[in-house]
Image 1 (cartoon, rainbow over the protein chains, first blue to last red):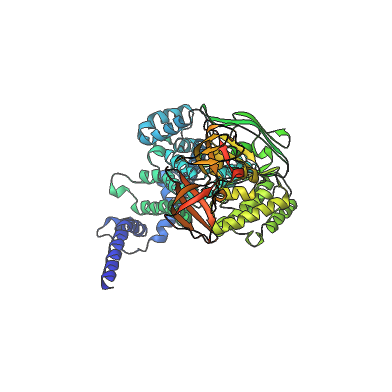
Image 2 (image 1 turned 45 degrees about the vertical axis):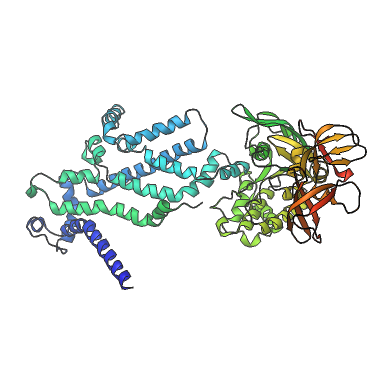
Length: 281
Length: 352
């Protein structure tokens, strides 16, 4: 009993230590967002919330950030939400459709298609960024939501995940649906989609965060400040000299940049975990 | 309800023929069981009728309509799968209603049909449950309900009882037979279990290696098997089959024993089939041959004796009364029932 108690204490000790290490920078971001620039820049770092919280957040929302980036925080958050949602939903639509085709239809070069999708996994995004940029320029999609979203919505990983899940659907289920008179679309809508919901939730969470934290591509494909995402805006707010950077507002923006992904994870956590660990069949 | 006709139905996979031409006429309301060992093509044949497998050549008609190129839904059939294939996210009610909903039936009509089927199968208490909350037997009944609710032209069942335990299987077997008789539903049923086949069928198709070896009533299949394969496959314990020489006065058995049998045609070497229950022990001095009893299985009402014909290594199974006093190691005198002998060709296994 004592040994088990000790083991449990040790386990908790390491877990709490891990949480502190991971969470401290985030905590510090929050603390810093409640102090004035002068306090932040003068060591030591305060560890408790300061008196400037209301002032900082009000300033950030009412134009403080706008003065730096030229656009309001609301617009940045809105842009980022549209892009993250577009990428997450787009990825799910495209990868589900391609996995559906690969698993349930027999067409020429089916396996060739699968392998083509599969080998794109081996190419890092950076390798194809130049040609992609050229295509976007030619299509006139620079500084548009389409330009920000489209190149990122093809996902070999999500296609593979859906393919693996679809392959676990017993053939008889498809056959029963055929006997019941369900065509391909009805089978997808009435049977495959409801059974995939937990997987969709898991992939949505992962891809939403992927979209939210995009940096390189939005940096390349946007010129105007109105199209910036919050991550890009953050980058632009930080200048080389410490004294020129409104660190208090940077911290406020950081907090606001972190909140939506956290919200998505918390709201979808139950489904997300279910989708990762089990499938209801 | 309708009749089903198969005409020289064949199936090939990549040039390899697996069903070698099955022809059969299934009457309206008839219960036909396709039985055979695994890999004989019985499921493939059923799936061709269902429209889940393409028909390579030949013709399938359901209710006088050629259905070769029709999708399953256009054939007006219903199917019960071995693993039931219930939609896991739908309740029992939704499972049964799904086909009707797609067919465009109105809501009150669907409800009435589902209620009728549920009553017939005693499923009313479970209508709002999901399949995973049901036992194996209940799932099986839901699968039956989903099939029957549509009042299809033909009901197709692919080993529907093989996932149930032995006791439940007997129960469900009776229930299926009863349902089929009440609804007079044309039914095609696939199984590898000969007890299911014998008890359920109006007529049997015994298949082996993609060929219908015999299409006949269970009684006929048992008493006059058309081929050596059918003889050995149907019946438990299996029929004794061995090679004998046949002339016009009798048989020369393995081990050199001569048995006079009146009224035989001289056929030379043939395969002789003897049902275990047809072999009798001879007490008087009528013609008999010696069998050495190697072991005995006592089952209560019956006892099965396993022996060899003396002077040979041909094994023989005998079915005896449970009251028998014979014991292991005994030398039995065994007679042949002249009117219960089955002869098969040594060349092609056909009944002579």
